[in-house]
Length: 323
Ligand SMILES: Cc1cc2nc3c(=O)[nH]c(=O)nc-3n(C[C@H](O)[C@H](O)[C@H](O)COP(=O)(O)O)c2cc1C
Image (cartoon, rainbow, N blue to C red):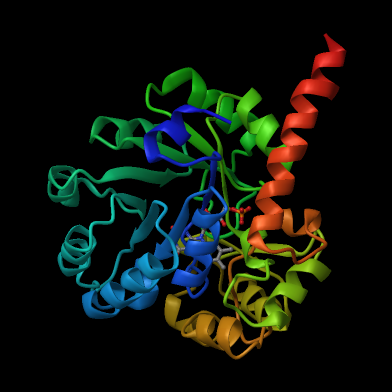
């Protein structure tokens, strides 16, 4: 399949694996890129430029296809060494960066000068237009369904994607709630040039996370995610569990007086415990509503091959017959 996104990134299929904390390691990124999609290493999981360099080199040893690095810009009193991380990305020759969170404008000149293509993840049309204005090459439009941070507007992809299509000139992929060929074809019908998946890629054999996490996603239905940290204007969609229930009880009791310190036990330092130690109930971790569409743990190659074969069938057979 050829779209503006496959052309932009030099990939075979318009399928991107979004950056995921403690999931987006070299093994997963390489598996996605080797299967013809675009794999992405999560920069902040590595934390330091030295560790990111090692992870990028590991990925380069596992694939000769294009892959990217995610840089999530968070508000922080002690920010990560973003200039150092970018220096390593440039030095190692990575040509694609997925940015997310705050506006990456200050870091754009260095990356553009190095010939890096930037795809910014946005949860609204206005942020997508801003990304276009500051020179991003593409955007990943993340609807309300998504795992992780859906923003505060609560607009699902059936509205958000055609709104983005009406306003944007740069290409965009649909993100949030994407799982299979139906998602891809629908996203393209709504104006996207491909799709970005997070949760679906966790439940694959290549994701270097504990089996308990994959099983938790397979067992979950579309009713099993919750929104947390709404009153902190830092909304996150997570998989429900007893720790999340206790966090939500605190949010209810404290209302607008809630401070981050009140929920630190349920949200800080959770990812290594969940993803590496295999304790999915250790706290709150991002998961999309799309868990309701996930019932197996294929290899990344099987997943992408199936999506592309079934997309072909939907377009050439089912949709063709309807007209
Ligand atoms: C466990 C997990 C961790 C994530 N971590 C990050 C992250 O560190 N940075 C980021 O930009 N997005 C992160 N995301 C969001 C994904 O990149 C992607 O946008 C999102 O999962 C899409 O929604 P879906 O899960 O419905 O496919 C994370 C998502 C999940 C499920």
